[in-house]
Image (cartoon, rainbow over all chains, first blue to last red; front, side, top):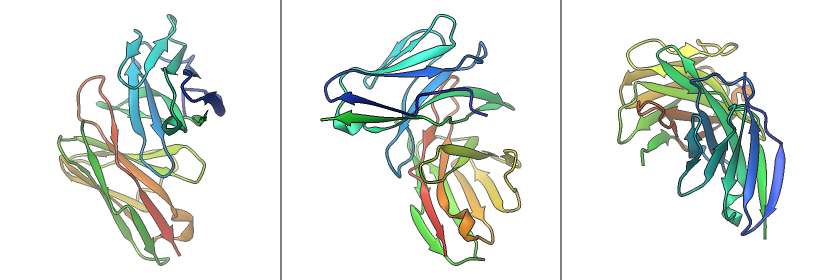
Length: 112
Length: 116
């Protein structure tokens, strides 16, 4: 079962920051938070991931609360091409590896 | 960045036939690959974990005799949908783990299966 909950949809204006929230209140201490996005009929694209510290890369920033029960993905200057479904995922241990269990995601619409 | 290639991108077959989907890691070795399926307007559902040199691990409710997984090398995993029926029509996506601790999973571009 997915360990994350996200709002089903959001929208923002082009050029503005998009802040996508995620709740993962049952996360364990060694479980990472991952964000992927999916544009229609394509494979998911990696965005960012983190454990407890905030992270930033060329695509986005990830803010994780101190208790790790929630996080926010920030797209600093959203463009029309950022319209996609965004998935917040908790990576769970599986045998000697791990797996990503997808939740229902947030459909982000960037408006012109 | 790491690339995962999935083939074919689209396949149409008759009911009762079997279809094989390939997933290759192009520039890294993957001891573990994952297979997902996705129905329209739904999220990805993990079907199974493919382990190189050993049997796949299937998620609850996924028929292992229906969805045969073979991971014969460190760069190739295959999913065979046996005796496909219209209800098997779906978008199938694979992903691979380069193995770095705390690292990313890379996804293929998906295979749209349509069973007539």
